[in-house]
Every structure is written in structure tokens, then in C-alpha cells.
Image (tube, rainbow, N blue to C red):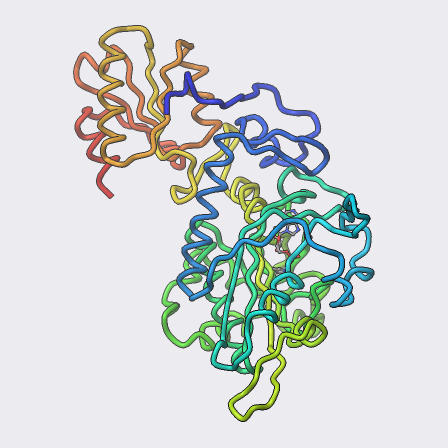
Length: 437
Ligand code: P5A
């Protein structure tokens, strides 16, 4: 993509109403624009990151046999009356009336909708177990939408739902998700710590939140200091015994504010840390809470009726964009982990308009694109300082910098955004480095 044609409305000034780094940087880098409180438009740069995160989430859900569906954003109130949540949910639910005076709502989550689909379609124990997920916009009329996409009113969530015959089956589905979440976040470069959590309006009696530690996080947490170890996932056999993997993590103390246990904390002594965290996922086991009232049952092997055991599993997809920036930025801007970066390479032409420079950059651009690299080519006729600042701001992992003096000798500069390391090397070596591994 040529930057001269790309729609990336960057801002030099820090937006006054943005209180945390990720919100400021997303606005300054032209990733999003606010439409109204807690509601955002995603511009090309932001959408590319959102899609990369979505793809990782999809791949990891598919890998555990969870099948993708797409349910609507608007749901009939009737469904929520059946589960008993229509009145219980409160003012966070956006309630709508259609032209026939029917009560509708913009879904804050989809337990009811999926349970109805399942109850209508499935009859026999042979159809179980099943796991279904979708990635869809949700609406929650939060009292205090803030921090940009971190606490939005409209936000993108991955929500999965499991249906099993009995408790043991449901526990396995829960374990699959638990372990899969560790992998999912690790692929984005994040360390998301699983913590015992409250179930809130979703309900149920087993629940874990996944949090990344950040000073700007909204949750207060306490956990064993081992979770701070950067190699904390080393040696975990993700393909082995899932209950064993889950026990390894749940065996170590980690709790969100409402689940903290003073006795366990006292016993930990110096091994305890307290911190703030951002909740990037939340999983629930809630048994028959929805399947019972909504009639999600199957006929068992002996002809008896079995009410399904259910769980639900959420990932805050749009929140993750902000959370990743909170975890990876410096004074100059964002530092994207490669797996989610909107482009991998930023090619900077230091003398746009100079025929030799333009030609060399065009060649490198084509070579990189030909090798399957995502490249943003800054071909604008602007001062070098502005180009460097913009490239640091948008945080692409690699910057390939080409100017007339270096090019005369066949040399360019390659800068790693994360380490700041900047080396002068030949064009060929730069291309080889960027395209090999
Ligand atoms: C689990 C999936 C649920 O809704 N039902 C379906 C369950 N869980 S949850 O914890 O309420 O939400 C799941 C994740 O969504 C993100 N999230 C938000 N992101 C941005 N803005 C919000 N207002 C918001 N609310 C929730 C969080 O990452 C949460 O873990």
C-alpha cells in the first residue's frame, strides 16, 4: 500500500479527552474515530489489526473443534423472557421496539440465541458434544464508556458456547477453552493470566477471567509472582492432558478483586503480587441455567431426556487492540507484535520525487510484495523527520529506510521498531532479512 493513497488520518496533537496511551495512540495513528460515546468507526489501519486478531482467534477456535456461525446483533425480547434475563439484565441492555410494537434488543451476549438454535435442531445424545462460536458486535450501554475501545458500548466479541451431555463433558469443553485461550493470547505476544472470577450476569459456578497486567487496567488483581516469569508457558504440553494443563495454572493463586482470599494471600507472603489488569477474556461453566428453561435437551441412549450442560467463552476482540497497545508502546508510538501488525514493513523513501530514489524504492516495494510481505510504502513528498515520526507512531515492526546517499552505494537502513536497532546494510541483505523467516 502506498501511503500517499492510504486513508490514515494521523494527528500530531494529543487528543484532549483520551486518558490512556492506547486511546491516544489509536486516535493519533488514525486507527479509529469516535462516533458517539463508546462507539467507534474503524479506519483502514485499525481494521487491519482487528482482522489480524480475529484471524488468530478463529484459527485457535477451529483448532479445538469449535465451529463458526454468525448470529444477528438484534434479538427478540421473547428469548430473554424465556431465560428470565430480560428484566434481570438492567439498563445496560439497549431495548428497541420495532414498527409492529415488538420488543427487540441489541444483543449484549448470545446465550439465549444459541440455546434456541440448538434446542430447535438437536434431538439425540449422538449429536453431542458440540461447540459453536461467532464473532459479532455487541452492545452494552455501559454507565461509563471510557478508554476508547477498551470499554466501549459497541464492541466486537468472540463468544463460544458448548453443549455437553454431562458435567464431565462440560468440564472437558471448559478445559479445552481454558488451554486454547493461553495459546490464543500468546500468539498475539500477550501474557494473559487466568484468574478465578465472579460470574456476574452470565451466571454459573465456575469462571475464569484472562487478564493482562497493565497499570491502566480497570481490574485490581492479586497473583503468585511466578506468573510474572516471561517463560511461564515453557514446557507446557498444550496437546497433552488438558485437565493437567489447567490444574497447573489454577493450582497457583490468581484472583480478581471480588474473588481475593486473605488467608491464601497471607500464606503466600513475599510471593504475592498485587497489580492492575485488563480483562481480555472470560469463560463460564453454568450447567443448565439456559438449557433448562429454554428446553435444550436430547434423548439419551436409554430413551431418557437429558438437559444439556452448557458453558460460554468470551474474548474481547476489539478491546484486545487497545490492550495490545497498552502492553507495547513507547513515547514515540505503538510497537506492534508481528502477529497482529497492520503491515510488517514500512518502506520510507527519504527523497520522493528523486528519480533514482523513486525507482529503487519502487523495486524494493515490488520485491517485498512479491515475497508475500505486507508493506506500507511512504512515497509522500514530505520531510524525513515527519516520515520517521509517523512510522514510529504507527509502530510497524520493521522500517526500511532508503535515501539518495545510501542508494548510490547500494545501501539502505533497516530499523527494528521494538529494539530501536538501526543498521546500514546492502539492499540485497535487507530484502533477504525481511523475507527469510
Ligand atoms: C462469555 C461469552 C460474556 O459475555 N457470554 C458470551 C459471556 N462474558 S463477558 O465477560 O461479559 O464478556 C467477554 C469479554 O468481552 C469483553 N468486553 C468488552 N470489551 C469492550 N468493551 C466492553 N464494554 C466490554 N465488555 C466486555 C471483555 O474482554 C470480556 O472478557
